[in-house]
Length: 166
Image (cartoon, rainbow, N blue to C red; front, side, top):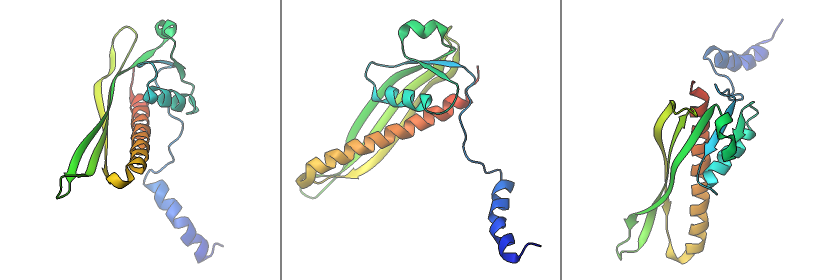
């Protein structure tokens, strides 16, 4: 017979399964091949391609323009903008706070032109303090924040691709 300690340790597991919780598994796509149409050298397209290829799904990612006719879906990365805006100044007019934004526009379509996901914009933004005395360190922090925002956007794209239906 189970003792109280065992019952208490199993209670959280029972609660989690009762609420519908489950770990996110391998994404399933409604298309077998995807052509990624992006500007040459796009860091977002590179990370997206790597993430899709390493996701464990059976999706074939195509980057060669000659393979476009064989793709079942086409992801058009329409724009990728890195923005930096001053949002705070000190009493002497020096910059004290910046807002970083990464704005990505994309759409998903079939090679015939039927839209699976219409023109959509994803936006990530972060605020960062700024100090002129440590400008080099702040530049490195800014680059790290842009990479983190890019990773977040790639994850959002992955989830949107997984729910798109042909």
